[in-house]
Length: 200
Image: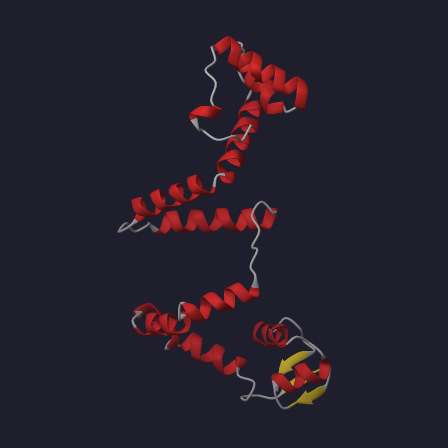
């Protein structure tokens, strides 16, 4: 019941006593995990649904132990050090995470102040700059014709914009005067999805 593993807190039980202990806990607290454990220790085979319940219960207990979680993370980190993942593995992980976020099984909880603090403390801006300078892939992408065309189209200084017949000197001016979000307006102009909004 989330107690410690200290010898003073442990009791030695036979299998029958262990089963009875789970039965008593189930009767007292109504916890489904204790009922399943009692039936399992009594010789009954578990259904798939019951196995899932037990695994979730075990994971929840594990996550409550901060020291075990840190030890587990360090072990994984150590095992992955120096190894590179294949493109297939990265793609599978990306798809899995996107699905988890979409279904609400995983949520991003970020404190803006903490994120800003980490950004400056770790000098992320400089690291990103150095990374781009050393990346051949990045150099090729920013010198491609496709990138130059996209940059020219999205540059608010480059072209006038027409929205519902009214001409504005730039995307930024159009965004301010029409109350359309700047990024949203730029995407509409680049993708040409609205005939009433276009570059002049």
